[in-house]
Length: 220
Image 1 (cartoon, rainbow, N blue to C red):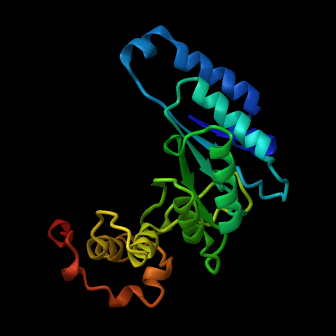
Image 2 (image 1 turned 30 degrees about the vertical axis):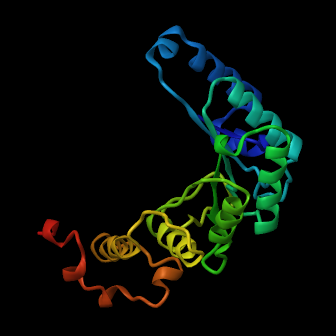
C-alpha cells in the first residue's frame, strides 16, 4: 500500500487525497476474503520529509498517517524521503520522535533517494535511520529507480554503496559485497545502465570484464 503524506504529491501520484486513499485501503484490508486469506500488508508513506516544491510535511501528519495505516493492520510502514529533502539529522529525529510517540521501531522502515549525482545523502540518511534503531533499509542495485511525480527523481540509494558503508561500520549485513559489485558490473556492461554511486565512481564501462561476472555463463 502506497500513500503520500504531502497532499500535492498524493494528487500528482494517485489522483486523490491521502484521506481517500486511506478509505480505499480500509476497504481492501477489511474485506472478508482478504482477512481469511491471511494476507499481510506493508505500506509506504511517501514525502515524509517534504515535497519537491519545498512544502514541509509536519511530524503530526506523518505520525497520524502512519498510525492509521497500522490501525488497518499494516505490519510495517516505510517512511520515504521521496524528494531527497531529508538530512541525516532530520531522518534520525523523525524516527526518534515516531518511536517516542509509541510506534515500535520494528514497525518502521526507511526508503531514501539521492537528489542528484553529487548528493549521496541517501546512504547517510539510511545510516541515520539505522542508528535510530530502524532495521529495514531500502536500496536498489546501482540506485535504479526514482519517483516520476517529484521534480528530482534522480535515483534510489545504491545497494552497493549502502552495504559498503555498513560494512565499514562493522555491521554484518550477510551480503557478499564483492558479488554485489560484480552484479553491478554485469548490469552496467550488458544492459547499458548508467554508472552511479560511489562504488563505481572510478569505473568506465569499457573496463568492465564480463569474464569476472558470476552471470557470465548466461551471456550468449
